[in-house]
Amino acid sequence: MSLIATKGIVLTHFKYSETSIIVQILTQDRGKMSFIANGVRKKKPSFPYGYFQAFSILEIIFFDSKTSDLYRIKEVTPLRLNSNIQIQLYKSNIALFLAEIIHQTHANHHQEYDLYEFLFRFIPYLDECSNEKLNNVHLWALIKLIYFLGIYPNINYSLETPIFNPVEACFVNSSQMKQSYFNMEQSKLLYQISKKSVEDVPSIILTRDQRQTFIQLILDYMNIHLEGFKPGKSLSILQEIFD
Image 1 (cartoon, rainbow, N blue to C red):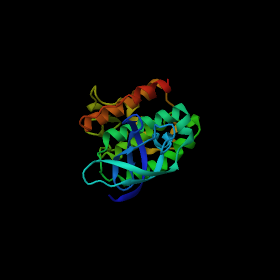
Image 2 (image 1 turned 60 degrees about the horizontal axis):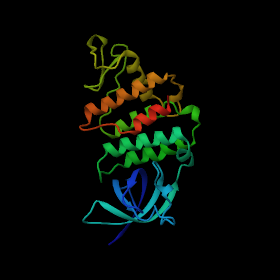
Image 3 (image 1 turned 45 degrees about the vertical axis):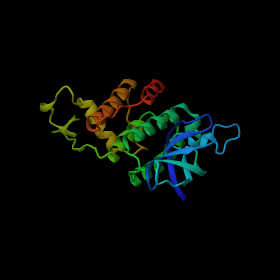
Image 4 (image 1 turned 90 degrees about the horizontal axis):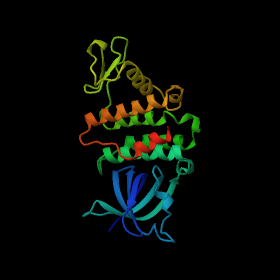
């Protein structure tokens, strides 16, 4: 059985046995893959359990398999463990929320080099930015993730088309507005966030209710365009954290 080396970003993990876990990792060259990490739950683990927290960036050597989609890890070298994401509640829950979205919406073994590169640049910012700049970061990142899903809307916002139609994925004239559309304020917010850099998005001032309503609208938009999509439990945790 041959050995393969790759770099990857941890999305999620769950218990497999008393001593082992299954880890979902977005790899640099093979897309999302499932790995078994043996012995990490022992008193003297083969690899530290902390390596496998959401958004940890690892170099992995694993046994290739022609008969299974579950690969066994032989060696792990941490490239970035994100000490602040691991210990700060706001940051850890943003990481869990975004990682869960990626885990749900991206198929196994579908090459995602651009998404990997986006996360590789975004994760250090999330880990190092001050807490005062966190309030809108998950909104910005969620909109950016839509691009990698192939359902990015037409950002044709203007004075003539100030209302976002989530079904047609474009901005329309206010005379066409229906109950299911974003209102004028929400539509403008979508436009503003989509045009800002992650460093500039904290300049948008939002109340707790505005932020929570907007993120639900974006998730509803994803549900329209992605069959079977459902946000996981991390959304409710994230909303409580920002309450």
